[in-house]
Length: 455
Image (cartoon, rainbow, N blue to C red):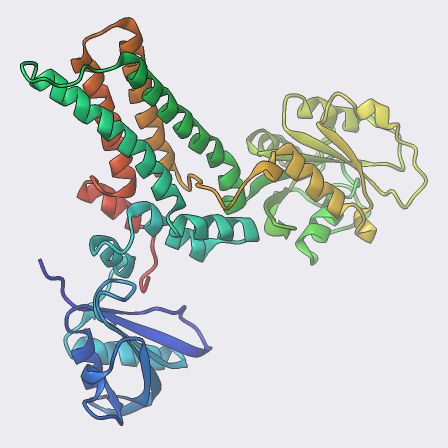
């Protein structure tokens, strides 16, 4: 079925130097021909692919703006269709007027992710590569961007296909041996079958190990900053944020709610939550803040417990210590610029690492970065290898692995090869659904539902 012609603004709305309206489909060049007037023989429809032309965008009211039109010819375009991209000055009014002109000449407004969806439908991308496009757009650091680009280049697809191909070969042999017993088909070698299943399981296990670390680089780490009042929690928050995000004062209890911000520490994204000082208090509002701080600790991926190094541990500090037991937590002994009275040995056993810092003078941020990387094993992450990027992919690999475990158990127990074949075929279906070679329309729609319009 031939798809219609779609159009959308492909750049973010807002004031900018340039903005782009993208048109894709069988009538893309005819639409562009009517909207953009170029001074070249044959006009837009005669332009070769990968060429640009200067012109004027027009509509029923007259000239809109001077533009540069770029033409991509099918199948050598992002969508695999004829594509015209109209670049004009980046004001919302101009972009919307150019888009309306395209729609008036036969295009329709594109839905979210519809350009990339067409690339998938036209065989330019598989589903994992399409998902990587959105991960590239949303990447917030070097590692996450590199991992997304690797996936866009097909690293995950190739590894999944490699596993699937080995299983398809075994499934074909099993099916032939089961269905045509009267034919002279080579007997199924149980040892070879078992080896293939084990190797596939090991490969899937390797992929599963990439998920949590990859997610940290993509989504960041949920961090709770805790401690008794006046240890320097808010000063630390401001240091990491790079501006005065939290109120800093000598008075106790200035932070009563959770103050949040997302910051970059080296190549890490930290979703910081600066909490109320934990202490015994009769103030009902401050008590609510303390309870909120303790709940924030429980749901955080990492706790940064801040202590005042210029003071010995207080009873409130010890309450913080007890609250950190069993959690993934780092102790930050603050105010290293002052004479030290806190005994660091008292913190041992409660934290994965104790770091001495001076939040006031910006000392210790690099040590904190190194400690977090070590704590989450981020140094082992290879962004140039295949990485599972989202829960859909992880779930698909898990389901395939479970089917293979069942098949392996059946082989070892001497169960009929009919049952083994069913399990292997189910695992293959899970893997083919991952790349989109055997995916339902519902799965495809779910993948593209998080894309922005214009991509």
